Image (tube, rainbow, N blue to C red; front, top):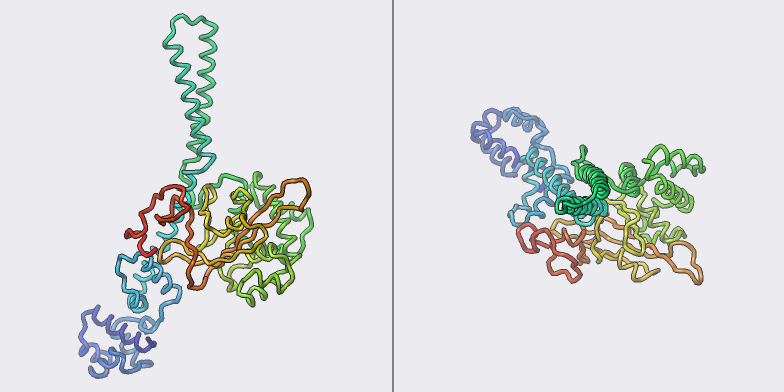
Length: 438
């Protein structure tokens, strides 16, 4: 639809909203009713004085009648409609809705983004409650101490002939157990206490450091422009992260410095654009090892036209040792992830690069192009076990081709017929109103 058509439709909609007839509006704007009729039905272009006269008659600024909905708003409305296919939203009229009711359109888009964020938060909390080791340890400690106190108390209550020495020992045990119970209960209460900010509480040094990295989008500008000496990196580590995360941060900064030296951003950025962010093609073009290229792609600076790129690294057990998430890509930190992800497939084929387009559940879910590779962690040695790490890039804006169906984790995945499901999902089954279109 051309701009003049949207303007004519907006004039008619605003006139009807105010209960004004065509004749009345034409008279107030100083034009003939037939001419206004042609404008409203997109048969005459409108601009200049006539546009301003009509806007003045409607009590509006002329820009309200001519402004075009932002592409980002239209995309957000399309995703909101696709996420609720049972609602019957008229997706062919998205632009008209946004043009006529920009305030309501922005509200719908904002609510859709909020719902998506809340769903991600529920998924993360579900993973944590189901599989988190600290929670499991705290609960086990509470149950163990309560059992011990009950056992001691039953002995004292059920026996009348316990001598004074044994009674003293049992009383001492009760006291010690009660102290343990108080400490375990306090630790559990602290863990379950609702955070005072929107950020989820972190539990490990890796998570503590990744919280800092998320604030910089995993891009350290200072290390991109100069090779900092050891003492400068140590000062950066001490200033930026909590004490428990220092060793993790130190290793990461040293790796980042080595990667920038091997592949400077001035070489990487143009090569990435030219190769459409394919790490294999970039590695061939610049002559750098594939793991270095994959890590460097995840450090591309935000806001410079690059697509969202996530990176996950795991050890041979599948446990994540590094995770850069974004709005399109996330893996559970505290629970087993979907084993179909190429990250885990790479562990079964060490040294073999894997590329796959993946699709998350839901009609509006993102499609990602994933690049995965498992390589030795450290030098190869005879007569010694070899450890491998796998890494996977997840690049947004994948082509609309048949995608490999993946999920976050079984507990929050609605794909009921998945052959590798390990536990039932807490979400509605595929085909229900909440998940139709999978």
